[in-house]
Amino acid sequence: MATAAGIVGTGSYLPEHVMTNHDLARMVETSDEWIRSRIGIRERRIVAKDEATSDLGARAARRALEAAGIAAGEVDLLMLATSSPDSLQPPTACHVQREIGAWRAAVVDVNAVCTGFVYGLSMASDMMRGNPAYRTALVVGAEAYSRILNWEDRTTCVIFGDGAGAAVLRPVDAGFGVLSSYLRADGSKHETICVPGGGSRLPASPEVLAKRLDKFHMNGREVWDFVIEAFPQAVREAVRGAGLTLKDVDLLISHQANGNLIRACMDRLGLPMDKTYLTVDRYGNTSAASVPITLDEAARAGRLRRGDVVVLVAFGGGLTWGATVMRWAGTPADGIGLEPEALAAASAAGATVRA
Image 1 (spheres, rainbow, N blue to C red):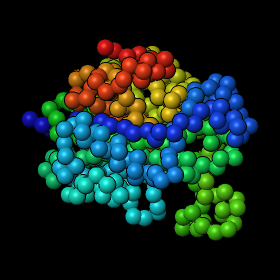
Image 2: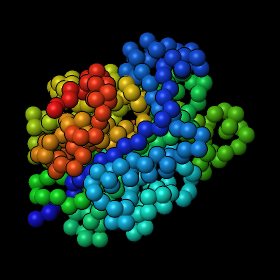
Image 3: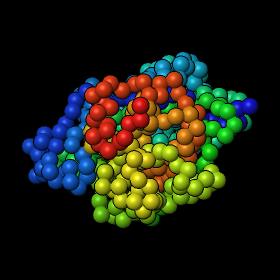
Image 4: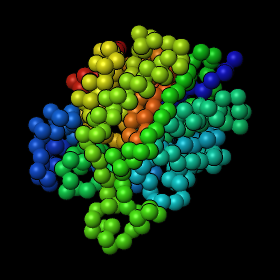
């Protein structure tokens, strides 16, 4: 008997244009060595002039639906996690709905910044539990951060990239699917990561534009101090909520903010790096898209098998943080999606690939 919601298909999309660290070094005072050693990024993807967040999200959504063998017309609920929407309104999820043809779906945008996909996944699974009106949910994380960055600020523009990932949820066998979630926020630290202008508090104006208040701002030192505590806490609490221990975890998929930060948090948890998967080196920090992009790549690389305990953990502006624990139900695309070159790149990034 199906009693829970689980992921039955994943997909992702990365824009074609690759921006390397050497490209950035021609724009701002930085270097390939500095970015690699401190953040662990060597390149990232950037949207084309005619691409918006919804375009990325729609492409990832189609790939997830294809992997699950489900038509867009079967989707009952569409949640889009983003902090770089197409516009203030309508919801960017409406644009994705239109592009993929999910006409029967209720839609909503989720803005918990980098934690958005984890929030959306938890919310969707809760809405589906015992509610026949929501049999199929599509949760998308999509970001076009290159549109909201200050490309003269070397402390932030080197970190981010654009992309989208998606997951299809359906009822799964008892004991599988989402087992627990732990979601938190601390609004007293809202200025740590933010886009100050462009909303109702500081509407767009010549002054806002001149001061770049419509662009992304972040205090990197404060973020590190926050994450080094919040990441392990969220994982421990979510695992405990599932009635499991850290020894039961087969794979941990983290928000891809900083390779060194992920390593430090895994060390605090006492988990080896072969129990996680890294994409930050190739795609940078894609905010709410980073968890589903990494999950999709890990699944297609053969890192997930039916019955595996998987933890998704993220942290971001708000400040927000959270984790979700799942027992993997399996998807048709597990282990068959990556070309040999991509598998080699993943292995080189520290993500051991199981055949």
